[in-house]
Length: 215
Image 1 (cartoon, rainbow, N blue to C red):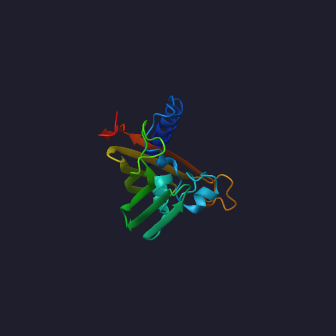
Image 2 (tube, rainbow, N blue to C red):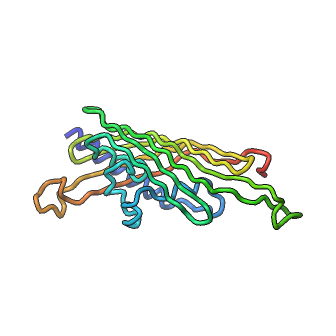
Image 3 (tube, rainbow, N blue to C red):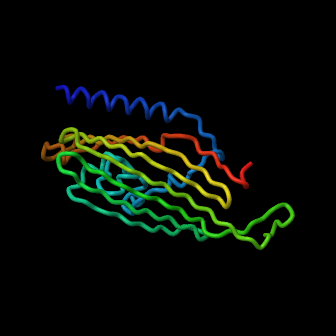
């Protein structure tokens, strides 16, 4: 009974946080680390990124840290995703199952923008000099099944962005829950029913670029 009360309170808290987050004002053109919005995993992207309630592999580090508790054995995931104009994204992650404790995971996301020409007001076609830009995020995740039908997970992230001589960094937290229900289950068991997932991603400190190129 005590566990059920704790779970209900956690679900209610997540619902309130999701409502509050959806009501925040978006400041288009002023945000940093937009690379964190690029989805991880071929299955998740093929499903239109509707993966928060389905996440059950190493990509859960990105989608919903609670889903990492579904792993039965240690696993790893590597992904290289070529984008347009020589932009490449790399994700590498691994998870280790610790019996009677939970699952711990570690993931790195790296976005390389390639080389670009330096331009200014005097040389708008390029000065002949090249510069590089890249973003990276490292996440440490812990996930655990509180009871057989309820999982909780959290991630601590370090985010860094570099543009030529300027850089910015920040810390962020991800929180997630996953509930297995008996709704629409032909067997009456939770594992065969509808899953309900909730996740709060990239809640953390602000990023501000610092360096000789920043204004």
